[in-house]
Amino acid sequence: MTRPRLVTPAPAVFAHTNRMRVTYYLHEGRTKTGKPRYVFTKTVGPEALAEMPDGFEVSESINAVVSVRRKNPGAVVAPEEDRKAVETVVGRHAHLRGYVVRAVGNAVVIFEPRPRPDELRDLAQRLGNTPRALGYVEDQMKKAQYAPVMKFEPEGAGYVAFRMTYRGNGGWSWPLRTGKLLDLARRFVGSIGTEEFFDLM
Image 1 (tube, rainbow, N blue to C red):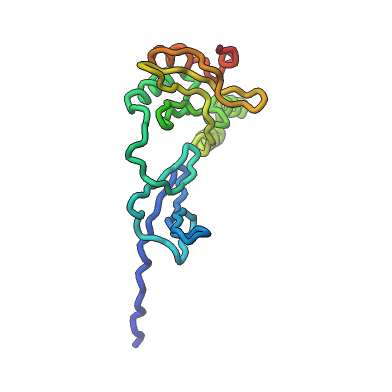
Image 2: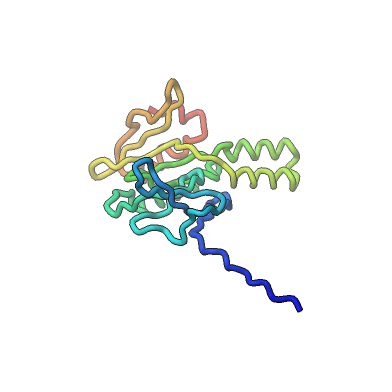
């Protein structure tokens, strides 16, 4: 008679699955001074943790990088209704499909996917818009990397608009205009992804 084999249950591990559907596991390491340092890895190791330590939380960047950050209850964040207002304006422009609007600190930032969806759609069209080509486009859009292209920062009772520049070292432009957030979004957002964008001043 064969004795039943005892199976030791796997220990619970704190896990997070990012937008790319990759799962990461929380581990505790040590800094050079011996202080605890919390990181996510793709495999479970001996330093895996079952829960997030008090005072810390998961952070996932726009490009799906998963990390641990200290909670900051006093952090100033752009109001959700302001982010949604800009998102609504972006959604009205067919050529901006796939663009993402996020609150970054107290600013509302528009991120451009790379490659851009219009470039992928042009590729699919050249390939005859076959199911395989369209499937490739959708898959690439899910895996897109994002870069900031325009932002609105609060100033006084309104906001100020900036666009990304690409000459020299690049970076944010001089202030384009100050005013109400919705007015700024309606004025500038439609130019993103067009030649007009580079003439904004």
